[in-house]
Length: 262
Image (cartoon, rainbow, N blue to C red; front, side, top):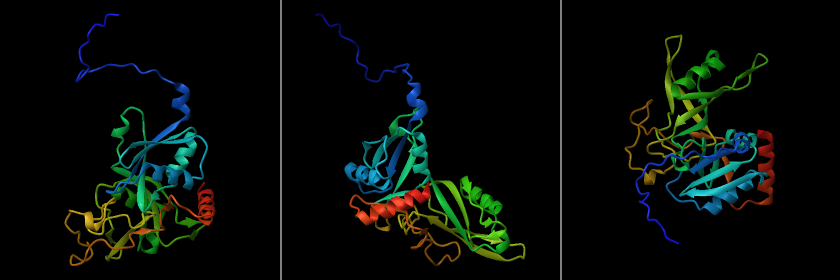
């Protein structure tokens, strides 16, 4: 057989018409998860931990994408959305940022700069503790995904507000703001972040690295420029902790927690 030598494909622009599989596109969901840590977490540890905390659901496949990144494919898209909305999840104290892979981009191009977080807003006067206030404050932070009504049946259920916001996590976490009240007073309002643990830098307030690894200048508090802006306690209600080694009792508690979250 005589082979005709072809020009190298190196650097060429190719136009390819991919075959579509409608059944796959309509029913499946693919997400790329990134572990927010400068230290590498092994793929085997990550895979075992995720499947364990989610109760080994059927129709879920996890594959290695690269350093601290995994592809998670759900046969049932509703299960995938349910799991994503149940986050943030934590692997050995490091948050997992789950983003949907839309298929129009390479798996390596999935944007992990943004992440949905529940923000608690503390220190508001009584007449400000409303869903409308949560919406207004949430829009000042980033893009509002959901707000929680602090009042139920004309009774106050919480002394703080909760709003789920898509945030740019490459920037420092905001810790609060000054509120100019209707009575010409200015009071400080605190932010707390649900289930992020203490996975933020105490030096600059960015998720994914520690103070010892930080090269940014120390951030000073808006309420006192002589004090550091960040300390322990910015994260509340610990993230669902994922560990490759869980006791039987831990599994039972996790399963109950996951059932309650549905």
